[in-house]
Length: 87
Ligand SMILES: [Zn+2]
Image 1: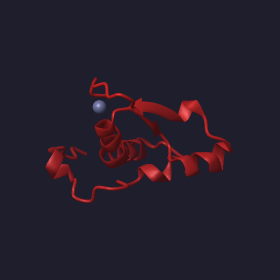
Image 2 (image 1 turned 90 degrees about the vertical axis):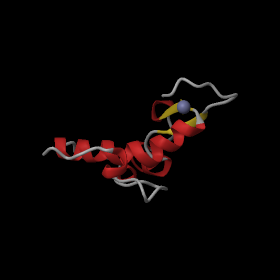
Image 3 (image 1 turned 120 degrees about the horizontal axis):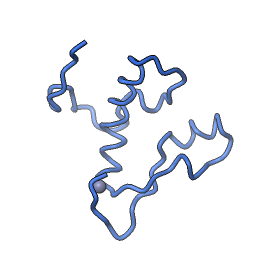
């Protein structure tokens, strides 16, 4: 995402590996993407819950539960990111 290239990027699961396997039965390249360690952390801890909320409001069904909340950071809020809810 940031354009930085580390010696080796992290192999990031888009949907949590266990959750994916419960539905698809096997791991798959389509559920992965290479990200640098910083972007990996931002994706898991910040982006997933925001995307989940937007998709939920849009009416997307069967969203990955693992995206519903941050899996690590607890102190990131809309105020921290200066994102308001206009609706
Ligand atoms: Zn990055």
